[in-house]
Amino acid sequence: MTYRRSRTGNPRPHELPHYQALLDDTDWASLATARGTGEALPTALASIINSDPAVRAAATDNALREVTHQNTIYEATVPVALYVAAILNHPAIAADDADLPPHRPTLVRLLEWLSDTAYDADDECVAIGERHFGKGFLDEDREMRAFRDLRPAIFSAVHLLLSHDSADVRDAALVAAIPLAEHPVLTAHRAELVDHARHLLATSTDRHNRDRVLDAMKAWGHDTSALENADDIAARERYARLKAERDSWWAADGTGGYSEDPPF
Image (cartoon, rainbow, N blue to C red; front, side, top):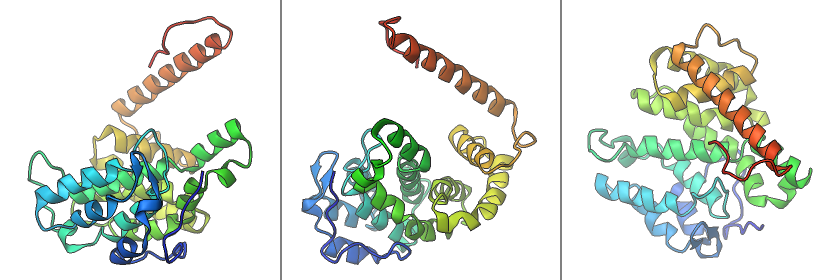
């Protein structure tokens, strides 16, 4: 795999470029996407900050679809992620109306995409890659390595939204910040993220968000037993059961014991 740089080269890992510079200085047509190359990305990305909410919604779908498929970090993923981070505080995004069905607020959708992408490049994914492809996995997967190197820059924009007026935005920012904070220079922020996580667990019923923050707190050595509710416990038991069934299937399949699809 290869990663083609923008015409001005990669930005410094801790600095977030201006969104217009990213649009103008990136050789989008040379970058691989899930659907080919990224020549259509500048138009779609620029339209995410359009004043019309419907245009923003369609542009967000079009742009993120180009770099979203099967948990893969593409060549175009890094500049798209930097652009998304750079526009999080843009007035058009900040003023997005949350009450325009069927569209969800653009800011929340962008944060959720950053979160998903960060989890696709987190330490667990690296460990899985190294188990399958050896310790040089990140040397080969230059796209993932480039994203991981730029986590501090992306975090700088996400961090500002942890105290947003909207609970949906705050929660989405927290879930995005958690995998970004795996970067060595960001570990000092974990105590702050745990405080936000406790608040989320006290106020939110969203299954995805609760799972993410509970997993992070456990990974960081915190006892979450007093923070879990009955639904959390039931979900944890269900995940454990499905994992055991999956592991059993894979073990049996390796010896020819099963011919059916795995139980998930």
